Image (cartoon, rainbow, N blue to C red; front, side, top):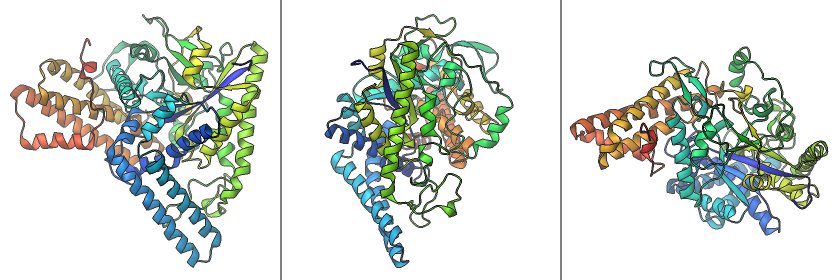
Length: 576
């Protein structure tokens, strides 16, 4: 590391649920289009700009398989350009509207949006040839990106009732990553950073399909089976103490159930013998395999500077206000002003005013990184690794100027005399961890546990998931070995519906109240389709026939939810 005293890496988690054929606005395909325009393309741009400027950027980014499949879909490539043109047209109408109303400042900002979306359209069509996955893959091949995978549909691992369900989420993820990026992934971003060790497990909700207790594998054992080498955790899972939490400030709907949950939890005392600036191997009690999967831990100091909208960088008064939008176009024309300001009191956005703030905030962030790793080096005489994991959507969506912040930090870290810029796989090879630890169950959600995904508003979803997990294992074990082409088609589509049903997004959207109706409808529909397909499977397996209406319905399911074309059904077979 050229005599430097430590290393730094951003780790970005990039995920959206399967929305491409499920409505348009606000939580259908435009959700994907919005993220591509505001987040994915700007991040690709800043990395390529750094290369063109002679820098050697390094970044770790997790791309969930369900998102990667959507970005590869021809339908996305078609609808995204239409979306960008709609945004340009809306800004042009805003410009006329503000001109008529004599507001030259907002007219100028409307022109800013015209130019901004026009550039994103050129980026997509000309620079990236309408293929964002290829753009990410090229940066990976150039040594810039370490691309991590995730659970196939972002299933919440600790709450799934069957090890086969977690295996399916992992194996489908690895297979999809190899297909789209050309290599096997080395790391995985566990959905919601949620981990569970090996222990005697009991279902957290009452259901007739799951009774008693039974031993479960540790998540790291399943990861090791499929060749994955590392994952990311929150600092409280390593050290104890109060978790940072990442969602409460952003979603008001969480506050009520969080208050209920706080009365029931106890915080594990902090432990100081371990450090968030080291990489460890993970082991479960009574695990039959040798530890081989490593863990990177989130640094709490730098995390709060970016996550907190109240006193972190995104809360600066000069940055673009996320929540206030123009009533005609949906474009944003106002700035944060201050974090407690009502929307009516927000002042007009001044794009030119943010450069100085970005310079100051990126310099402060790099100062924190250098100070933190210098202190660690002074105390331990060791070179540490500071890991800064965030949701990718924070940079560009929630915080419009975020990609420019990332660029400045990457520049400054590369120029640092103290810190080496790295990514997760490179750091794993450099530090070669050999210390073994055991972790508690937990996540990076508020409270460090599962309450966002399992509470009185979502308990019913888990009862359905648990029933379907058991049913599908039995169906696959009974029929897979004698399945013909048609039966295999039905089994595969049922597997897709089950995977989509397991997505943690539905419980998250219900709990945060950000899109409860949409999430409940999606869950109901996948659940209904799964159970209809199970009936079709049983009828066809026993009689060799299905009605024309039933075949049409099964094909409609495929048209709605065609992803993961090569699912290995043996994952769900007993004794696989």
